[in-house]
Length: 86
Image (cartoon, rainbow, N blue to C red; front, top):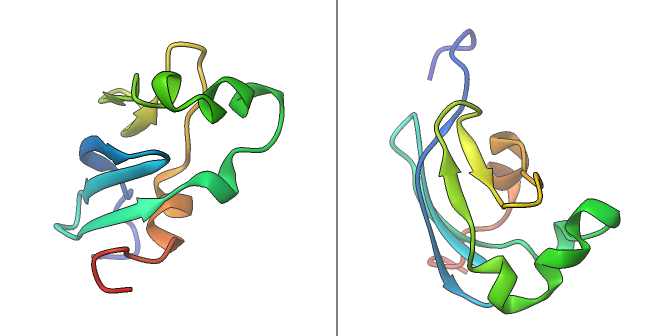
């Protein structure tokens, strides 16, 4: 990935409670556990596993988002350990 390219998420699906399988714009695929990122008022609803599963790919923002407007920067998700290799 060139330094000037913007990192985006091109595919996302929930796989388990607080886990997402993601594909990034540079082709990297990983599964991450995001529970550690769920702090602050905007993320409180996501602590409910049923609400968490409402995640959608926001193609305008290039990341994952929820109905209440919560989202994560692709870089933050990319920094999490890959569960598939842990």
